[in-house]
Amino acid sequence: MAYTVPKLTDYSAAALTQAAEECTLSCREEEAAIRNDDELKTFRDRWLGRKNGILTQINEVWLKGAPKEAKREAGIRVNELKARIQELVEGAKVAGSASFHSSDIESVDITLPGARRPIGSEHPVAKTTRELVAVFQKLGYSVADGPVVETDYYNFEALNFPPNHPARDTQDTLFIAGQQSKPARERLLLRTHTSPVQIRTMEKMRPPIRIVIPGTVHRNDPPDASHSPMFHQIEGLAVDTNITFGDLKGTLDHAMKEFFGSSVKTSFRPSFFPFTEPSAEMYVSCFICGGSGRRGSDPCRPCKQSGWIEILGCGMVDPNVFEFVKDNGYDPKKVSGFAFGMGADRIALLKYGVDDIQLFFQGDVRFLEQWG
Ligand code: DAH
Picture 1 (cartoon, rainbow, N blue to C red):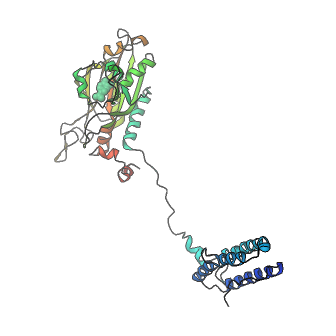
Picture 2 (picture 1 turned 135 degrees about the horizontal axis):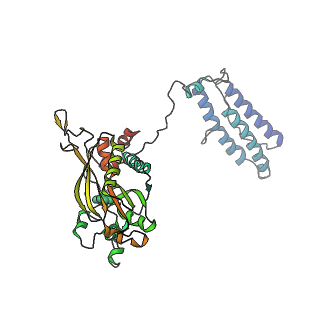
Picture 3 (picture 1 turned 180 degrees about the vertical axis):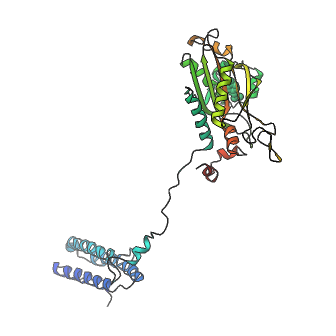
């Protein structure tokens, strides 16, 4: 006969003890009769179910029906009973099963592969930057950095771009709004290149210096397969006595061989930058087609069939630039130097054969996983 919660009329200690014992006994009997997992579940719901389980009913019927003076004692007894029943029901098992239970086996399938925790991988632009920086560190260069929000003075003026100079137009600049009340050189903008850190470093450190500067830059370029309004550069600067264009060529040629492989050649072609004189663009022989301009019977696209790929801008530091930091030991009559700047994203695109720069910045895990 299934247990039902009886109404109590007698709230004496003896009567409460008896009612609790009957309840416990019934619970034990029902437990012993459980034959399978379904019945176990029904049993648990019947006794512990929140809405209409037996423990809930006992609470209702026994406590609410208790006369005032018996309420306290009845409350203590009911709590004891609930703890006992709860322990019993939670520990209940299908009758006849030993401590080793079929449902225990199902919950741990040792034949399944373990849960794998995905490991992140280095972003191709970060990897390229790190490797290039390491090449220069091995030559004794230190790493410097500077702010992304820069003043007009450091981004342009101290790099020998005078106000209104047409060379400024080559770097479509994103200006910070609301700066009109400030003097022109203090107005803020997003740096268009890492070159301002050349000046910042020379203000802080006396010559000789050899530094590389990796960093984020911005230009007002609409995004397409080869442009992004945010991209990355690596800048370099070496200043000492008697630094020559030969040092520039030797250093950069070595760096390219280290990075792309010893078979690449370099070529320097005249160019213009306001902060270097003379200036050059450096090309490396195409490491995709080996300089032939062809891939089998197809034209080589990355080098546009020329066999050469433009990698960076460089040159000898313009004496006008040294004038801005002359007081810190950079007298253009006494020191000379070379500088260079390259696009880390562009180099990563070429090195990894990626045809759209946007893929670097969309954060699609399926793309990024390929470098794991
Ligand atoms: N800052 C230049 C640019 O973003 C690149 C560059 C050219 C950097 C020549 C240099 C340099 O340091 O010497 O276009």
